[in-house]
Image (cartoon, rainbow, N blue to C red):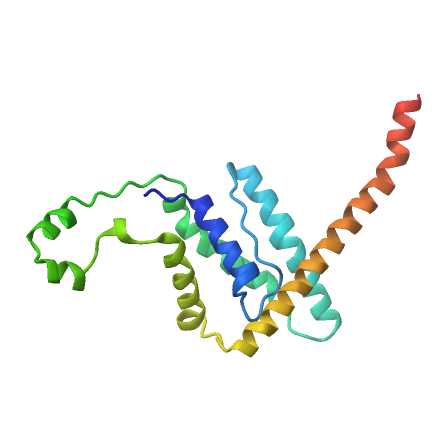
Length: 185
Protein backbone atom coordinates (compact mmCIF):
# COMPACT_ATOMS: atom_id res chain seq x y z
CA UNK A 1 0.00 0.00 0.00
CA UNK A 2 1.55 3.34 -0.99
CA UNK A 3 2.37 5.72 1.85
CA UNK A 4 2.92 9.43 1.29
CA UNK A 5 5.17 11.87 3.16
CA UNK A 6 2.04 13.73 4.26
CA UNK A 7 0.60 10.55 5.80
CA UNK A 8 3.92 9.84 7.52
CA UNK A 9 4.13 13.44 8.77
CA UNK A 10 0.58 13.24 10.14
CA UNK A 11 1.36 9.99 11.98
CA UNK A 12 4.60 11.46 13.30
CA UNK A 13 2.90 14.61 14.61
CA UNK A 14 0.15 12.62 16.28
CA UNK A 15 2.77 10.49 17.99
CA UNK A 16 5.18 13.24 19.10
CA UNK A 17 2.57 15.87 19.95
CA UNK A 18 -0.06 13.76 21.67
CA UNK A 19 1.04 10.22 22.47
CA UNK A 20 4.75 10.17 23.34
CA UNK A 21 6.37 13.60 23.06
CA UNK A 22 10.10 14.10 23.27
CA UNK A 23 11.36 14.53 26.83
CA UNK A 24 13.15 17.81 26.21
CA UNK A 25 12.02 20.03 23.39
CA UNK A 26 12.64 23.66 22.57
CA UNK A 27 9.18 24.08 21.13
CA UNK A 28 6.19 22.09 19.95
CA UNK A 29 7.08 19.90 16.94
CA UNK A 30 5.33 20.55 13.66
CA UNK A 31 5.65 19.44 10.06
CA UNK A 32 5.14 21.67 7.05
CA UNK A 33 5.58 20.35 3.55
CA UNK A 34 6.70 23.24 1.38
CA UNK A 35 5.92 23.04 -2.31
CA UNK A 36 8.60 25.53 -3.42
CA UNK A 37 11.80 27.17 -2.16
CA UNK A 38 10.14 30.47 -1.23
CA UNK A 39 7.60 28.68 0.96
CA UNK A 40 10.38 26.58 2.49
CA UNK A 41 12.40 29.68 3.37
CA UNK A 42 9.28 31.30 4.85
CA UNK A 43 8.63 28.31 7.14
CA UNK A 44 12.29 28.09 8.13
CA UNK A 45 12.29 31.77 9.07
CA UNK A 46 8.98 31.73 10.97
CA UNK A 47 9.29 28.31 12.59
CA UNK A 48 13.04 28.06 13.15
CA UNK A 49 15.10 31.22 12.84
CA UNK A 50 12.80 33.69 14.64
CA UNK A 51 12.27 31.39 17.67
CA UNK A 52 16.00 30.53 17.69
CA UNK A 53 17.06 34.19 17.71
CA UNK A 54 14.56 34.94 20.48
CA UNK A 55 15.71 31.94 22.55
CA UNK A 56 19.40 32.69 22.05
CA UNK A 57 18.82 36.35 22.88
CA UNK A 58 17.04 35.39 26.10
CA UNK A 59 19.82 32.91 26.88
CA UNK A 60 22.49 35.60 26.50
CA UNK A 61 20.51 38.04 28.65
CA UNK A 62 20.15 35.44 31.41
CA UNK A 63 23.81 34.41 31.18
CA UNK A 64 23.14 31.00 29.64
CA UNK A 65 24.75 29.50 26.57
CA UNK A 66 23.05 30.32 23.24
CA UNK A 67 22.58 27.02 21.39
CA UNK A 68 19.45 27.24 19.25
CA UNK A 69 20.87 28.95 16.15
CA UNK A 70 23.57 26.31 15.92
CA UNK A 71 21.03 23.53 16.55
CA UNK A 72 18.75 24.74 13.77
CA UNK A 73 21.71 25.12 11.44
CA UNK A 74 22.44 21.41 12.04
CA UNK A 75 18.77 20.53 11.47
CA UNK A 76 18.77 22.37 8.13
CA UNK A 77 22.00 20.75 6.98
CA UNK A 78 20.61 17.32 7.90
CA UNK A 79 17.34 17.97 6.09
CA UNK A 80 19.23 18.95 2.93
CA UNK A 81 20.69 15.45 2.94
CA UNK A 82 17.19 13.99 2.68
CA UNK A 83 15.89 16.43 0.05
CA UNK A 84 16.87 14.20 -2.87
CA UNK A 85 14.74 11.40 -1.43
CA UNK A 86 11.81 13.43 -0.11
CA UNK A 87 11.28 15.49 -3.27
CA UNK A 88 10.82 12.45 -5.49
CA UNK A 89 8.31 9.67 -5.71
CA UNK A 90 9.77 6.23 -5.19
CA UNK A 91 8.20 2.98 -6.30
CA UNK A 92 9.64 -0.26 -4.99
CA UNK A 93 9.02 -3.63 -6.53
CA UNK A 94 8.90 -6.83 -4.59
CA UNK A 95 9.33 -9.37 -7.40
CA UNK A 96 12.37 -11.06 -5.86
CA UNK A 97 10.68 -11.26 -2.46
CA UNK A 98 7.58 -12.79 -4.01
CA UNK A 99 9.68 -15.31 -5.92
CA UNK A 100 11.51 -16.26 -2.72
CA UNK A 101 8.21 -16.60 -0.84
CA UNK A 102 6.97 -19.14 -3.42
CA UNK A 103 10.03 -21.30 -2.74
CA UNK A 104 9.65 -21.25 1.05
CA UNK A 105 7.84 -23.84 3.16
CA UNK A 106 4.77 -22.77 5.14
CA UNK A 107 6.78 -22.92 8.38
CA UNK A 108 9.55 -20.71 6.92
CA UNK A 109 6.94 -18.26 5.64
CA UNK A 110 5.60 -17.86 9.18
CA UNK A 111 9.04 -17.67 10.81
CA UNK A 112 10.62 -15.33 8.22
CA UNK A 113 7.62 -13.29 7.24
CA UNK A 114 8.99 -10.45 5.13
CA UNK A 115 5.89 -9.80 3.05
CA UNK A 116 5.49 -6.01 3.10
CA UNK A 117 1.79 -6.40 2.39
CA UNK A 118 1.45 -7.82 5.91
CA UNK A 119 2.92 -4.71 7.54
CA UNK A 120 0.37 -2.56 9.31
CA UNK A 121 2.04 0.81 8.81
CA UNK A 122 -0.06 2.55 11.46
CA UNK A 123 1.43 0.09 13.99
CA UNK A 124 4.91 -0.01 12.48
CA UNK A 125 5.67 3.71 12.49
CA UNK A 126 4.86 4.39 16.17
CA UNK A 127 7.22 1.54 17.09
CA UNK A 128 9.83 3.04 14.78
CA UNK A 129 9.39 6.49 16.39
CA UNK A 130 9.58 4.94 19.86
CA UNK A 131 12.79 3.13 18.89
CA UNK A 132 14.26 6.41 17.64
CA UNK A 133 13.53 8.04 20.98
CA UNK A 134 14.94 5.14 22.99
CA UNK A 135 17.96 3.96 21.01
CA UNK A 136 19.09 6.98 19.00
CA UNK A 137 18.15 9.87 21.30
CA UNK A 138 18.69 7.76 24.44
CA UNK A 139 15.58 9.20 26.09
CA UNK A 140 14.21 7.94 29.38
CA UNK A 141 11.07 6.00 28.42
CA UNK A 142 9.66 5.65 31.95
CA UNK A 143 6.01 6.48 32.64
CA UNK A 144 6.95 9.40 34.91
CA UNK A 145 9.19 10.94 32.24
CA UNK A 146 6.42 10.47 29.66
CA UNK A 147 3.98 12.34 31.95
CA UNK A 148 6.50 15.17 32.32
CA UNK A 149 6.94 15.32 28.55
CA UNK A 150 3.17 15.46 28.02
CA UNK A 151 2.85 18.29 30.54
CA UNK A 152 5.68 20.17 28.85
CA UNK A 153 4.01 19.61 25.47
CA UNK A 154 0.76 21.05 26.82
CA UNK A 155 2.67 24.12 28.08
CA UNK A 156 4.28 24.62 24.66
CA UNK A 157 0.87 24.27 22.98
CA UNK A 158 -0.57 26.95 25.29
CA UNK A 159 2.44 29.24 24.78
CA UNK A 160 2.12 28.80 21.03
CA UNK A 161 -1.61 29.60 21.09
CA UNK A 162 -1.05 32.73 23.19
CA UNK A 163 1.82 33.86 20.92
CA UNK A 164 -0.34 33.45 17.82
CA UNK A 165 -3.19 35.34 19.48
CA UNK A 166 -0.86 38.19 20.54
CA UNK A 167 0.63 38.34 17.03
CA UNK A 168 -2.79 38.53 15.38
CA UNK A 169 -4.04 41.14 17.88
CA UNK A 170 -0.91 43.25 17.34
CA UNK A 171 -1.23 42.96 13.58
CA UNK A 172 -4.89 44.00 13.70
CA UNK A 173 -4.06 46.87 16.07
CA UNK A 174 -1.57 48.31 13.59
CA UNK A 175 -3.52 47.46 10.44
CA UNK A 176 -6.90 48.78 11.62
CA UNK A 177 -6.01 52.50 11.31
CA UNK A 178 -4.46 51.89 7.91
CA UNK A 179 -7.47 49.96 6.65
CA UNK A 180 -9.83 52.54 8.13
CA UNK A 181 -8.08 55.40 6.34
CA UNK A 182 -7.96 53.47 3.04
CA UNK A 183 -11.65 52.59 3.17
CA UNK A 184 -12.83 56.08 4.22
CA UNK A 185 -10.94 58.16 1.78
